[in-house]
Image (tube, rainbow, N blue to C red):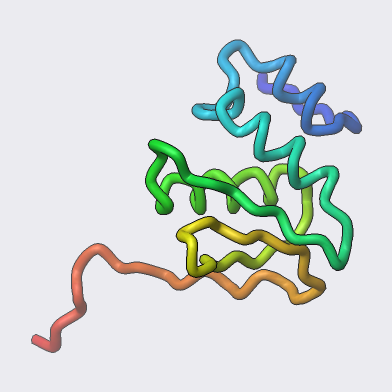
Length: 104
């Protein structure tokens, strides 16, 4: 018979307990550190270098979810990505259906 138990565990401990860490978790460490140090009223400026803006934005979103902060981001005239904290809750994700439903 299957047995279930519930324990209190923070995310870092949980990820250490896993046999294989979540995909990309280690790659997001610098993003989590930068976002953890960000205070209200500050803006984090990220120069893309050889990374695509899309990849950076995905990592910023994933890292912010992991540490439990809400962020917004945009780009400046120089092509840098600006990230700041917000009090606004995350918008609900849109459901995507694989196929459009058609009437029979």
